[in-house]
Image (cartoon, rainbow, N blue to C red; front, side):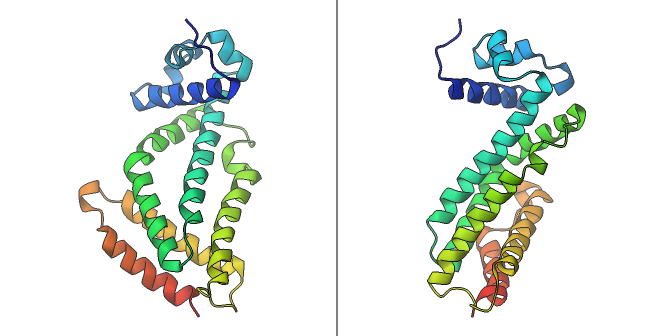
Length: 201
């Protein structure tokens, strides 16, 4: 029996059900809208009220995952007033992302290859890339106010340096099995040294 849920809750239930099916080993090509509906505990017709097709669900799930990551990143960065605090928060965020969510995101990415999403997929969404820039620029603005950044450096350079160091952490963690991940203290020390030289007065 379909639970009484608000529209947004139903959408999220559909997203979570889709992720659960994929995380459980289901091949996207074999997943049906009926299976998604059953896993979400809503009717199949209700799913079609929100999404015209199974592949539209997958594109929406992908966008929802990206938005959820931006929410987490924004929350982590909002607490930071110094460069060291920001680096620590970003390392913690990246470590948790790799440990807890990268695996299912890889499965979703593989399914997207099957779905052949259109150009309006999340990777091309300027609202999402703009939000990422906004989150990081807000953090940089707080660091500037606190005298943590070289005043001669513009936002584009600071964003590039910040993103380059964080992407290198992601690559370092995802390229190695968990047992070989560098300790947090080592990542912190290297990232602090790198960004300290790149951004501090």
